[in-house]
Amino acid sequence: MQPVGKYGQEDAKKAIFKRFLEEKTMGGLMITEPDYGSDALSMQTSYNENSKHAHIKGTKHWAGLTGWADFWLLTARQQTESGNLQRDIDFFICDVNAPGQQIVVEEFYENLGLYMIPYGRNLIDVKIPLGYKLQPHSTGVKMMLDLLHRSRMQFPGMGMGFIQRMLDEAIEHCQQRFVGGKSLFEYDQVQQRLSKLQASYTVCSAMCANSSEKAGIDVDLVPHGMEANAVKSVITDLMQEAAQSLVQLVGAKAYRINHIGGRGTADSRPFQIFEGSNDILYAQISEGLIKLMKRAKENNLYQFLKEFDLSDKASEYLKEMTNFNLDFQMQQRKLVELGKVVGRVISMNQVLDLAKKGFREDLIEGGITMLKQDISKLISAFSFNNKTDVIEGYQENSSWLNFVKA
Ligand SMILES: Cc1cc2nc3c(=O)[nH]c(=O)nc-3n(C[C@H](O)[C@H](O)[C@H](O)COP(=O)(O)OP(=O)(O)OC[C@H]3O[C@@H](n4cnc5c(N)ncnc54)[C@H](O)[C@@H]3O)c2cc1C
Image 1 (cartoon, helix red, strand yellow):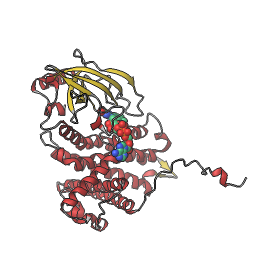
Image 2: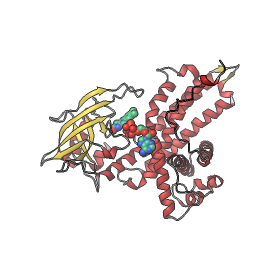
Image 3: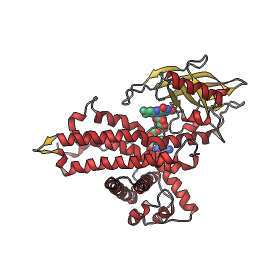
Image 4: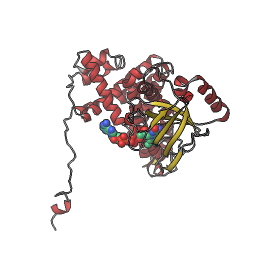
């Protein structure tokens, strides 16, 4: 709805919104292809245009609501006369009930979680009227970035309900379950888990407040990649940790397909993969940081964070930990580790913004303590020098059976 609202042509918008409002239709987004997931810009779905239609051909998979949605946002690259594909990406609205716009589902996948959403592989061979092509303000790639960044900024909206449910289930269970003559609630390690869950609730609240102010439909989010990547990757890590923690606290009972904790681990897991794999997003956060630090001619992490608007308030809490010079040449694994640190610093800044607005102080304190502890662990991992690569052909001379006495 948001991409159509922002970039759709007037006639298409009118017709589509009417159907959403009156007929409860559903829509989905098809970007991913079997050979191009993270590397979406190299997608091979292509189109040719005449004066009326764009003829789109390709294969898309893993689109949520496969086989169910009435409308699809399809992404494709225009074919040039020489047969090559343009670098830019275009978006089309496909109305599967209109003539020449059916999408063939070749296979439904047996997804591990999120059972209520069908996924599969789709064969695309459709003719879309040109009035149903989205109109970028500059390039199609920038339009895609604006859409993706807004979507990433909105992840906390999904995280909020999820984390609150995990927290409430965990508190209720621990109050009622007695082990060794006392309630689980009274054990220190249990309190540690519950307080971490509660801290995640606070961080997610801060992110929701921040995104609702910053990520409105009218804002161009192309330049806000670092913040969007931080919000998406940190909140999805917290969602997964929340579900894992609930399972640990509930024990065997949670290891069931119909338990909210067990389901939560499988259902929250793909959030760390889709809309940008977290490993890649964390690396991109660091790449963005390094670019900005170079531009500011600043090598000291603390000095930079102090002046940077996404971290200026949090920096004081982290002075000791971050007061070192960064070597800008680093391996990808270090970029990922540093990105995890910076993602949590940015989150802490948002928590401090929420505090200023008058959110409960006790919850704010818990949120800050959790983030500080996580950042401290992550900085220590970052400063540990590990260049180990996988050893190929590792089976040779590595069976433990050869090293015990007969
Ligand atoms: C439940 C679910 C719902 C989805 N919904 C949609 C949807 O509605 N619409 C849609 O279009 N797509 C959807 N997807 C697809 C999703 O966006 C892709 O799975 C995602 O982009 C990753 O692509 P891939 O699976 O091909 O993995 P790959 O691109 O093969 O990447 C796999 C892993 O390799 C590593 N990796 C890849 N590149 C790099 C790199 N440059 N540096 C370091 N490591 C790297 C990362 O660990 C990454 O997670 C969904 C997927 C799932 C699981």
